[in-house]
Amino acid sequence: MLDIPLNFKALDNVLIKISLESRVRYERRLDSDFNSAVVDNRSDLFQRYRVGLDVKYKKDLEMKVVGQLAEVDSQVSNQSYDRLALHDLSEAYVKIKDRESSITVGRQKIKKGEERLIGSLEWSNTGRAWDGIRYNTEDGWDAFVGRLAVNNQMANHEAYVGLVAKTHKAGETMLIAKIDRDPTPTTDVYTLNHRYVGNHGSILWTAEGSYQTGKVNDKDLNAFAATLRGQYKAKAKLSPYFEFNVASGGNSPTTTNTFDNLYPTNHYYYGLLDLNGLKNTVQYSIGLDWKACKSTKVHFSATHFELFDASDAWYNASGVANTGAGGVTYYDPTGQIGKTLGNEFDVYATTSFSKHLHLEYGGGYFVPGSFVKASAFNGGANNTRQIWGYVQATIKF
Image (tube, rainbow, N blue to C red):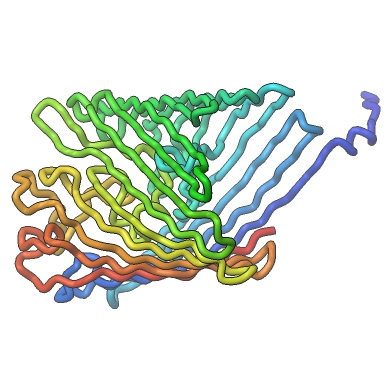
């Protein structure tokens, strides 16, 4: 018989935590094709359940596994409900630390900056996670390479990302390589990004810029994007802000200038209706963050949207071209229709009833501009606004 001595004192250095999450969100969208003559009002019920196990040994070792079940029930007009159910591991990694660095191996979530290029997409029902390896140092180096494993749609097993970033006094500088072989066989995008956050008196400034090169569909890529945001922080309850976003677009027979938004978390930045992303766009926003009471925060915003290049498409938050009545793509290669997309007005609030129960609710109203209302996209049909609203409850233990 093998005699293995047990050291119960070692258990004093082990912390075991079990986590539970249940999130339910109901959404309602009216006139998604901006055509009041077509009955296409949509309801969606998103449900997500996660169970996690987190084991930590001293400060040197961490192991985490999170399983999730995600279900979506969707109904358009009076048609029957469609159900989509997905189950997978949201996270499953081992993290080893020392005084100066850490290394993480396995399925993990990657968030960089404000997640405008690389984010975990937690707004979606499944989130986003990568199978890979990450290395961090105390002096600001961050490196990662991995394969896309969990995504909002079906996982693309031919999508890879590598990045190297350095945080310094002037902000964070990052180089990102995106290699995607499905569905486009020749997508190799290289992005140089820099982000700076600083204060000037009572104003918090954020400036972020990106330049891209590489190959997309056998065309040379030459694109850029930039964000400038200023928020007044002097008042405890009221905090107004302005934001400007631009991302290049346009194509020629040999070159594409359409910025690749990579793998972001776009929902809270470019309109709650998710009709716009950081791709062939020019956006001007003003807004207000209001702390209504100790448990409730409210956000208001108004945004004007235009195309950067009138001969390129109108892209949504997922990076896919929007479609109008009859599935016609919002794309005018002649550039004659113009650039004005419209204006969006959003409001949402979060209420924390306790550290375990949170409620989020709100909606948006999009007023189409001349480009969206063009007869080329709706056959001369009656144009209308688009409305979207939601309520979401989250329970965490």
